Image (tube, rainbow over all chains, first blue to last red; front, side, top):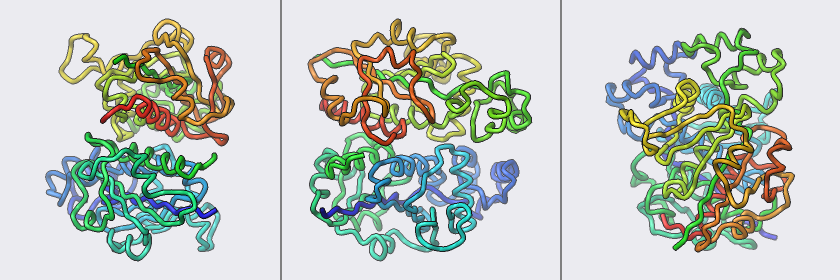
Length: 244
Length: 244
């Protein structure tokens, strides 16, 4: 039986380390000191760095500094049978044009403390391998980050889907079932990529929206990224009669 | 139109403050000091207190100290249109026979740092109200915790459902759609309560299992509590044609 490949891209993800512009702000320095890290090694987090982000006039600050959103979104996607069975590929495209590749065997930690540590190591070392694995075979790489890869380049050169479906309240209203049944089916090995925003407020930037084959909405009132992910992936499993 | 009431109970939840038995362990004292709290005011968390839990021979330690699981489970339930529209009631029944009532208007913080702060305040003050609200009307209470309420007492005296459905890999295999369609329907105002385990490993204790009307499984391999919650509540919304 032919099986489709499904990709999930978390776009404009509010995940980054503290940028140089605000690394000297007292709230950032205090937080870094507590963690025993350099200010530019810790994750930008509005819960701790709100004042620094506002006072430092960080560009697009309202869309940044929410690693918790990415933690929930990844946890949701990586906890599905669709991911366990290797039918789902997951990418994080950050607001700063970094791309994170998620290895097939990754179990994301549910503890935020551990997730934060993992991400700080990834930003610093660029790769996270299975413990005690020093070879570079793909199965041993859990996470890898690349700099200077735009969303457009990720889609056109790496993901290369047949259809790219954006999810946003600005899209055409459909049920999740409708969206999935139109695009995912057994015996159809086309590759469909779903794109979910990884930011707290607002909409996709124009340079992202213009790449979508369709822009769809699954609710008049906005739903959290992790809820949209849970529903889309569950309907994909149903469409494929995935037994787990 | 008659609408059913749906309840979700997170049972044997691995959420508690550090118990007296291990409050003097160095890892607990160090962690409490860092937070500027007393050891018995911080949440028991395996990520920080693993050594204390093992060396202190904490009873049922393998089922305890996972506030992250409860954070994900609550976030999942409280982010659904079913909850927003007031059709879902959510309860947390902890491993120590405490019960947490979730107010209608609660938006649980996605940041673990804020969630942790909220829970520590709840365990200390027993109630969390909307800011600047000092009256005791129910709409102003966001969270309330009661001591010494067993799961049985919660179900029999407070939730009082017509059917109590436990979700566990030990249950009879069904699709989520089958479980929901058999128990939830428009124009049927019966009250169905779903019970999900809020612990990392193992199964429901016997005194909990024996209260279930049915014990159902939605996957041969275990799924995370938050995934089960997402799927059950989404199918409930579909069964009720909830428009959102």
